[in-house]
Image (tube, rainbow, N blue to C red; front, side):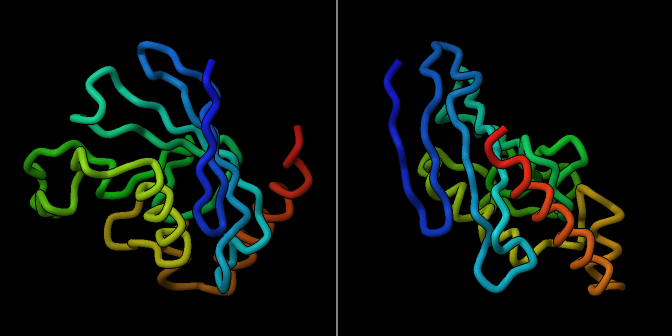
Length: 157
């Protein structure tokens, strides 16, 4: 197994497997974003690559629980660049916003870091987080701070 590491400001990513199916090659630990409620957190995520990569996008799933409008309760991240390169059947996203083979794990991580600080609440994956982000920032920040504390306590498990 070849291990490679990539550093993006505020994050560290490394390959943990080199399987032919590309099913579980990456784990990402993110220490939070400056000037966001996620600052100081250690959120592990797994990036999984389909056999048709780079023509189809990987998936990114947080293994550490995180409360965010663009993260399903299962931990799966919902951002445009991880959506397949096809027309959006709902007409919400333009093709230029979706997956392109020029994207890299680094650009995905940068998008996720940006997402943490600037959620898209127009089509939230986590409805409750989206509502709190829009209507009750104080409660949203309280819930995120709890996630950060929990992530710190479980960072090395």
